[in-house]
Structure formats: structure tokens, C-alpha cells
Picture 1 (cartoon, rainbow, N blue to C red):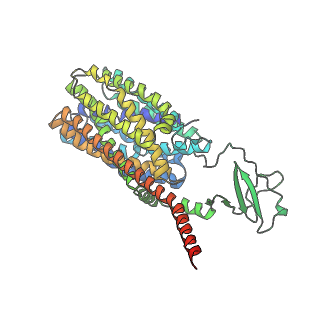
Picture 2: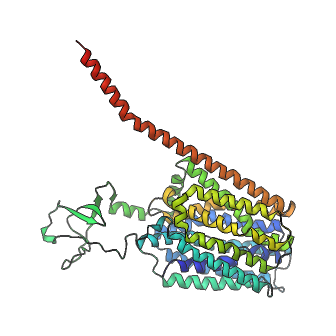
Picture 3: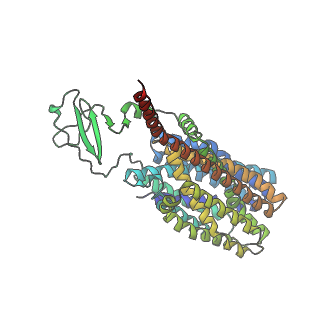
Length: 499
């Protein structure tokens, strides 16, 4: 079973806590500012629970067990929303409904928010284990695209049904998604070791009796020269030789070492230590910091669309929930092709151009919202969301994997990136709800477009400065040999001229 089914079922769950959540809370009597505060709680939870649960998955080396616990718990707490849906329920006053909605949503977020980074990290490991170079972002898009398909189907279904039944159908969708995802997690073989399970490795190892205590063996493993120093071997893959228990010290001639002691120490690193190591690596150069600033600002900007667009459509433009669902389908129609060619996009443009493309597309889209008074016209700019999300998500996964995290910390790095993104989401949801209520949608979305453009300019400036400095340093380094040679010739000429 491929990771695409994890994404497909996971986004069924996300549809029940996604864009329609603002409409759901509005039907419960909450104001736009209060909706922003309730929804912003999830982002606060991401900062703490995302890295911790992701680090726990790395520590246990069993994402499957962690997911099997998180998904049912999140669905169980979400089902408690029935107490505020029932008209004869015990919570009829505005204050009590606000408190109950906040508490239920917070408990749901505690167990649901780590699911996405854990699935991302698990997918990267799975792709690496089956021999795909896409562990850094190539084939990742082809698996992730099934989440977009599911997202479109689930939102369109909710939009059609809820126009006739009501927003309580979101609880039914959550139950369906949780049961499906739990089943997929339990049935799949996800925790594959980093070594390729299906690769054909030919180790020409002589008989045990021929080995001496310090004998060195030269082996060829997938085109690389390997040197083994050992007195015995564990599970020697040779016919007629029984597996014996000892440690194997493998050292490549390229200078890379993998020692059993180091791997055991890595297994024993606590979750907090993993988060601390990834955070330290993330701040190693200004370009990484600028990248994280863009992650935060994009989290802010995209949260204004994810959480308040449907409120804007229904309250300001008088839209039906069907149009809201159709808008999601339009975004996914453009998002899916981009995810399918995400490997080509990354190879051609790289991380920084992809982020700039995503941010420019968002700015144009946000400004477009402020120009329309017919909800159907909003669909004209919705394809830009596919450009924004696909380009940004592909660049985020690639950069986090290759430039922020070391091997074995992939899931922790994804959780840390989600935490940084959540900082922006907190500002977008808490402040955005208040701005929408007090100043309207024009100020909200035009301000978001301006902030995104500023962060994009910062990233481009730091990237160009960093690249120029590296070019200058490389040029100076290349001049050193010629300068030394010139100095040597000058000294020789002076020596020859001496009497």
C-alpha cells in the first residue's frame, strides 16, 4: 500500500475541520473575532504538539503506532460538538457555547495537528526505502496529490449536502475520515527501514573460518567501495553460514562512517533534544532564517483564506455553501497538475523561485477578492490557490529535508516547519478575525497581500546576497594557487639574480 492512501483519507478528516469550520462556528452564534480566537488555538497547539509528537514518532521509530493513537482520539473529541448542536443541550448561553467550542476544538487540535507532519515524514522514509530519489521532493508530489483529490471531493460533498441539512454533517465527515485513516494505517507496511528492502545487494563474503581478527574486506555495495573491519558478522547473507551475533563497523572510502554506537545513541535521543537539534540547524545561516520568515508569513496569509474565505463569501457576498465547495474544486483542478510535475518544477526552478511564485500568486488572488461583489466571480481567481499551495508545499518539504534536517530527523524537521508556519497562522487567525469584523474584507486581504510581498522581497534579497558572497569567496579561493605560483616565480628570479 502506497502513502497516497494516507493522504487521501487524512484530507477527508481535514475537510471537516477546514474551511467550513468558520461557517460551523458562525452557526453556533460566535462572532468573527471569536471565531478567529477559537481557530487560532489550533495554531498554538501546533507549535508545541507538532514537534513533540513528531519527535516521539522518530524516537519510537514507529509512526504507525503514533498515528493509530492520534487519529481516534482527535475524532472522539471532535464528536463532542454534538452538545452545542442540539437545541435542547445544556449550553444555551453565548458565553457557555463559546467556552465549550473553544475547549472541544483545542482538544481536537492537540491530537490532530501532528498527523500531517508525521505522514509527511513517513512518506519521505517510505520513498527512500523503495529506492526513489524523491525522498527529497521528486515523487513526493505524486503521492501528495491524492490528498488534493480527496480535499476537493470532500469539500464539494459537504457543500452540496449542508445546503440541505446543515453544518452538523461535518461531524459525520470526521467520523468517516477517522475510520478510513485508522484502517489504512493499520493495514499498511509503513515502518520500512532506511535500507532498501527490495534492493539486490551482492556481498561476496568468504567463509567465516577464513577471516582473521583484523582482516579487511573490500566489498562493492551499489557501486560504492565499502571497507569492513570485523571479527564476525551478524546475519551474513551467504548460503551455508549461520547468523552470529556481533557488531559490524562499516566505513566507506569516501569518508562516511556509520557506527552501531552512534546509531544507538541516535535512537536514544529524547524528543526535546531532537527538536533542539533541528532548531539549531535551522538557524545556521541567514537564508534559512529568511526562508522561515516566508513560512510564517505564508502561514498567516493562507490562514486568512482557509478560515475566513467562506465567512466572507456567505456573509458579505451572500454565497451558498455549494459555491464554497465548488471554489475548492477549482483550486484543486490546478493544484493537482502542479503536484504531478512538482519534481520537474523543483529541478528547473529550485526552492526560492518556487516560493516567490507561490507568494506572487497569493498576492494577486487576495487583491482579486476585494474587487468582486458576485460570489461566482471569486472562482476566477481561485486557480491561483493551486499555484500557491502546490509550489509552496513542494518547496517547504524539499528545503526542510535537505537544508534543515539531518538523516533520521526528517519527521522532527517537518514538525518544526509546521510550528513555524503556525506562528503566522496565529497572527492571521487571531488578528484577522478582529480585522474582518471591525474593518471589513478589503483591509484584511489587501494587507495580507502587502505583507506577503514584503517577505518575498526579503527572501530574494538574502538569497542573492548569499549567492553573491559565495561566488566572491569561490573566486578568491581559486585565485590563491595562481598568486602562490606568481610569488614562487618572483622568488626564483630573485635568487637567480643573487651573486
